[in-house]
Image 1: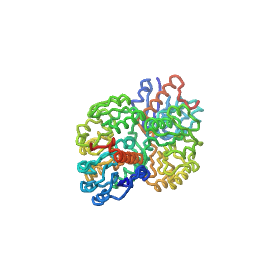
Image 2: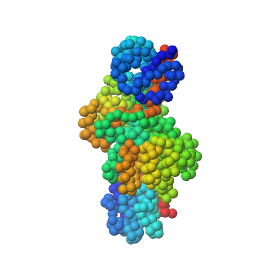
Image 3: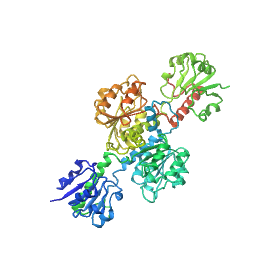
Image 4: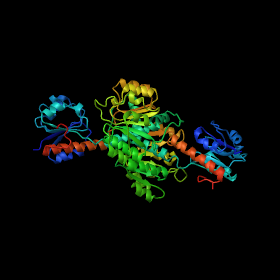
Length: 319
Length: 319
């Protein structure tokens, strides 16, 4: 008997779990949010755990999971969803699904950039309110300097759409310079504060961690030319909240677009201060496509089968 | 003495008129809307007329314009702004400025497409209202079939951004097939109703005239698969209003994005029937960038100088 696989959450389409049942496993997919106690019970006889919900996998929750060999996390940033130390100390592998969000997030970032550039949200809302008329304050993207902070997989894809498709003049800053991407896409490398001073739009796409927290601060934003667009579809607090407020007030940043925002309360005061022609915020939806979700599920299912069948997989993150 | 040039409207930056003053002409630029009488007076001693305002140039207005050699229209569709027959019968050349809007309109169309695809307007407004949470109903553009109706300069540029930048699978219908563009961008040609049935988004980019009026009617929209996006940044009435209403009601069209809409009243009823997750309308702003406006002004100024100095120009539209 092959055993049981626990799948949590409701975002994995049943068809994508077929390889698991075909391999002889019994798949259990409770879609409601699991309490620590329910999770512990569900894991007790599980060989694998596809983490697709909003639960927290504590040390207690996995303490009795005697058959568990792998926790396959749906997404990249698993750390805040589980006690990785406790899981690792039990010899359980953790995997994640990098790369599956690349197009989804890159395309959404371009959507935010173009919407900010052309005042799409504001004009759509104005039309609904019966307001007509306009001002020529907008510019094309083609031939104009756009800056990207961070040239990982998503940043590179954003650069490609901008350089090859929209024919912008793309400049970037990255902790490590990327000469090959630079050459292939004709990008120009510059230091962060120089970048801020030489572009009409600044796109933030670095991972959220201690070194990037507040990376875009007053010293960076004060270098922007009046009317610069700021697009942050990465973690909100990479941009210092007070520096953002100041730059919006001084009109150095004319429009800011965020996907996900500061903690409630803190964020709310900026939302009420700046209207939809200055600040566009969406609720962390950049990776929210069926393509990205399916890609993650396919990858997680593959990792589970690899580990159960051969003990190893390329997406193991804990050693 | 070289004479006078009348420039109307307020969208031409003074710097761009310098070639005219440098050639010795006196430039007069009243920025307020001119009455027929005021226009007649201003044209009486004008050698050229750069039409950049919202006035109407009637036969009466030009009747006493004895020195007038050229009316340079800022834009493409001059017909509804002047009595072209009266102007032509006086031996006055009319020019327009094709091609200058290409990038501006193409980029705005991509903005509308991505906004519709990712529910950007709706999610931005929901965030402002304090509503969180989301559903996975969105998809990437990469690898998905997108259709373009009309492959003129703007349609071709849209196809290029989609195919080369966003890596969509681009299909098109056009009155005349374009084998060279087709091959260069790897597009697939199909008949209009087939196109509607085989794409996830339909982009309308044909000129507005009698043959395209109502081109996208019930017979086309009824072929759409449920959930198709419709993006019309061309003239609104290329899409039959009742067919649109029906397709939205049946959810064959899940989201429609228009730039410019049906006549007041007619349009208003659709606006109140469908909210911002189904219908996004902006007020004819696709060509509203300084790049496009500057490009037009530079072209119009060039045409005026050509005609005044040599009697001819490549942008003459009346013979």
